[in-house]
Image 1 (tube, helix red, strand yellow):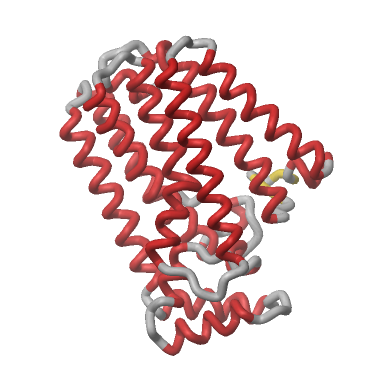
Image 2 (cartoon, rainbow, N blue to C red):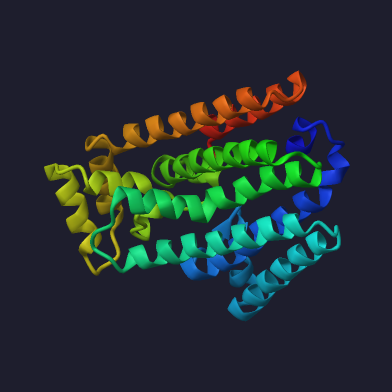
Length: 273
């Protein structure tokens, strides 16, 4: 909606795009919880936990189908193409995330590419759809799309940090959630690639077959911190935000919309959930 207003269009023009993106987002969360075996999201039991895996999978399929239908009914073929491409990238990113669980070594570049598919692709689509449905020229669509991509990358990096440092009372996820399931998030991969003794020790803990105990989880978090991976991830997130703001400056939206989108970039790096 803000992207539509950024190109001087009424926000109502972008409403089908906003609905479609939200439906796709929730489709991805329902399936993600099934794949990861997560039992809680947003301080509530996950759908598969309450109603079973078949129901959760079918509900996700239904949400995705509805998202496509909502955009098709606008008659804007370009909007449908943006959403289809985003879903394809999202699935590629999720597939890579799952493949990383079976691999002993993952490169930092691979991990960032996975984050771009899994998270940034949908935010890129959201800002692009606002511009497309707002009737903006291609240059404005591209600028807003890349603004969304940079925002999405920062969002995912902060999410990765919260998976290690976040408070379960705030995030709604178990303490040290990502380490508990040995997820190869960006800070973990950066730590393992640090060529340090702490990074090697972390990699060894990740290779163990038995689930980590509480003491091991705390040690893993400490090892990530000691390699400098936490600070590296924070700096990289801030760099993405700086690049997003630069694109916003080039676009030159109305002042109140510039302020609102800038506030959004600030929220992404300061959020605690």
